[in-house]
Image (cartoon, rainbow, N blue to C red):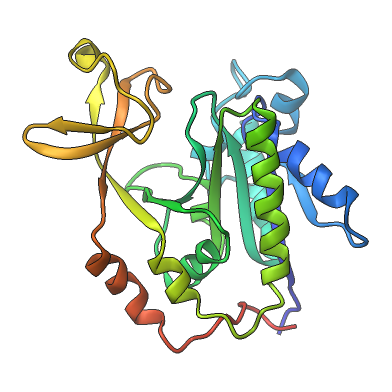
Length: 264
């Protein structure tokens, strides 16, 4: 079997989201053994832009699994990152947003290993936002063996960055806990799933939306997220899962414990 390391952090998948680089750098300043991390979009990060514009550009987090040797940087870089990720049990992709959404987890694929990884982070909100079948490219965390995404906002807020640093430090301690009941940890979380969106053209009908705020749409209670972030929609609409559904998510993995994938 191939020996694997524990965890790889991907930072600056979008070049204007430096919070991940700053947080991991701070974590490493306080550790005798550094945490492994890479800068996802090195060119965009050097320019301070979300993506690379123009002929070779594109969104790195919409490009997995990528294409080896592609002339498109985002496709080639996505493939390179996934090759690096093969050497790790767990992959955590750190993102930042301008909106005040605090720190939460995104799962782009649902399986027992990803649920376990998400539960190990002391982060109360988890969003199930799966890559749709048939899409040409997807999120990096959905294309690795076991990966999650952590979103933080506002990305330039020192308090949010410090919260991310503390969360990562606590997670690194939890790696050595072989007796945890991660399913119980997961069931304590607020779990949401993306069910719809409000089109940009209808934004004037919902003038006072806030991140994670309740909104009634077509008679259903939903929760708003990424308000005004994407150009083609006003926001995502979320449904909060009841505890019974969260329990069902954990059922297939009961009895698995907290073992990591790969061999050590």
